[in-house]
Image 1: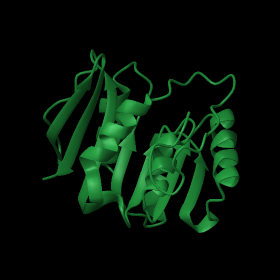
Image 2: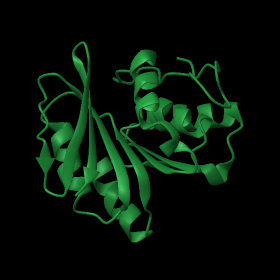
Image 3: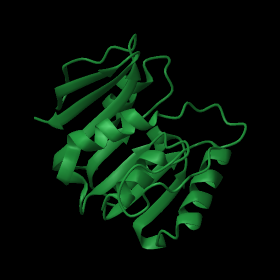
Length: 184
């Protein structure tokens, strides 16, 4: 997989071997970053269910101030750390948390972390995207102007409003959807 734009443009990143992950296609990642545009520069970003770390690394490449990567899979965490090291990304710009996303929200809240952009790419089953968004709102980790983006399968329908989150954009790429939320 390659980084699409920015400082690390065209650099190749590794994928976790033996981990059951589904990498997001380059064209979907590129479209997502085109949609959020200049909001990425200087932003603090959360990459939940990070897998290879492609979303977060792309954000760093495009000027994000800092990214927190979360994944509970040991192989994914190791791959993210290797990708960050290979690219020479400064340790103060990237934090990798090996923990279940729902538990990590609590840890992030206790550390008083706040995110400008939150990217979610959970497994495509058991309403994980919806459950993740609901659980996210139980913790004070989003800035008032935060953008929350969930990648999900076409059968995993997300509501227009979910407690404090309001959907303002949905983009479809075949069977894959990107749903964008902001706080009301």
